[in-house]
Image 1 (cartoon, one colour):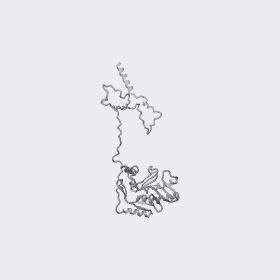
Image 2 (image 1 turned 90 degrees about the vertical axis):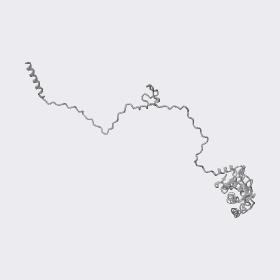
Image 3 (image 1 turned 60 degrees about the vertical axis):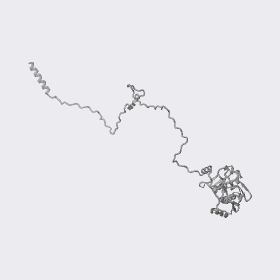
Image 4 (image 1 turned 45 degrees about the vertical axis):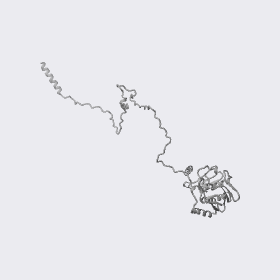
Length: 321
């Protein structure tokens, strides 16, 4: 009986299990959020900043500087900080090179052109022999000397011929000298100077073209005569050394001027105002027609006269002061 009851109970349970449920069984849908997030377009994403800046690993020390026995050296960087090495001072401080006594210019450096005035001074210091010292008169007078005399006569200059001057010991020489009696038809000169013909012609032209007009302009009258202080003199320059242009009859010193009204104008360091104006005009105009012009203020030797000469200079230069 009991067995039959158990069998029956089992069938009942099986039948209940095979019977479908009374209503449909549906799964519960998930709840949606009230608003859905909208994706952002073209938005740059910034990566998060690192919390710590990485520090590069220090370079390994050379073999000689590596720590021994695993012990760290005191000068190794700690806590990620880099170390700046300090330069070690040299055992011996370097000494600056000694300054040379005088720097030598390079071999190919450009050379400045020579200054004519400095070249003349250098030549004077060397006291080279003057080629005019050996000039002697020929049997027949050269053509240029004859032409010079014809020009003097055309200007109304009165002159006389003199014998040649030549001193071999000193070096003075005038192969064809003349003595001036006048510098033109209306201008006398005294004492009568002995000059070479070229210097005589230059003096006569200067008297007619410069001295006479300057006297007219300043004093309203003509020059009657000119007083000379020196012409041909066989000597060296003052102070010795090179021969003077006077030694070749190539220089004339003027000490005074006399006007047709009798007024006399003396050359000196402090002449009256009108005289000074006339003398300055003559002196300035002389630089060019003559190669050397000296006077009061140049030096003590020329304080009382005007010195004019035709000294041949390099490149045709002049010396006027």
